[in-house]
Image (cartoon, rainbow, N blue to C red):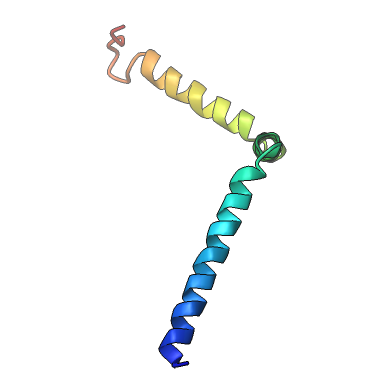
Length: 83
């Protein structure tokens, strides 16, 4: 057998193996969505815990209050802000 024939046979075998693995993955999806949702919930919980641990709610709240006050308060020229 030539090396090309061996290469062609190994490529065909590899293609068959990939097709078999893809079929097996499509068949064995039961319960996978629950695991994905649990993973997403865990990531969201970690983000919320990190935000709380860093004290970001107070920082964000202060920044928003400052922005609202700068918009609604009278300007330095004495003219009132228009609603």
